[in-house]
Image (cartoon, rainbow, N blue to C red; front, top):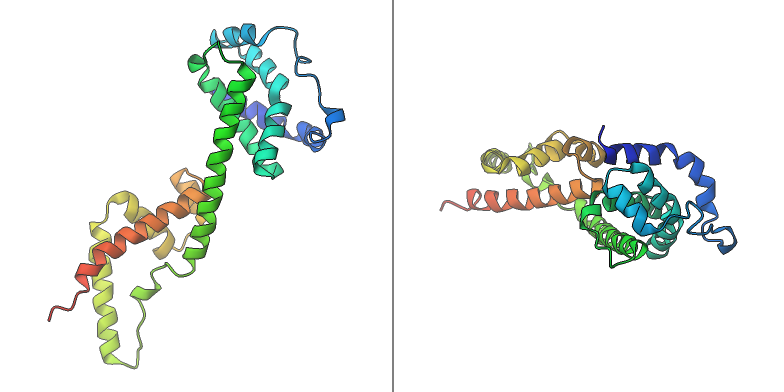
Length: 226
């Protein structure tokens, strides 16, 4: 297990212990001193962390977790989002310590990471809302509409199915995979996200893009040959 994963695992194990503490974060009377975790300077701790001293970075985490969480909560307005952003911010901070420039305060640098993550999450939430609205009308049902009582409609449905198979086979693998998972296997987005190793919002976006690509390939195949 690498150091980043160890940090995430340790933070996850501590979530239960921190849950009650986080409930009081917005109460200023409960905020601990930022220097309470250690009397060592941020600069000293950053240097030690860069040299591989993981305990030094944990000290920075305990020193600034409340500050990061409070800022994330003010940006997102949601406790769950704030907790996720806070953990991700410290993971990214650890990963990018070699890029940290000493002329900037560590706390300022950390809050810049939090701000960027909050902005990313806001865009993701907006995109998720749009995707959910489009999901209801953007499936492949239009490819299989037909009436068993009308031979002409059945012929048209057969032609669409053939076009669908050809277009699907011609798609790049990353588009074809999500079409198969969502529209043929009818997997839930949570399952697709787990299979693809992405977020649920990311899975929805991939499905939307794949459907658009599929429709572009199907259109020429459905043109009236006459």
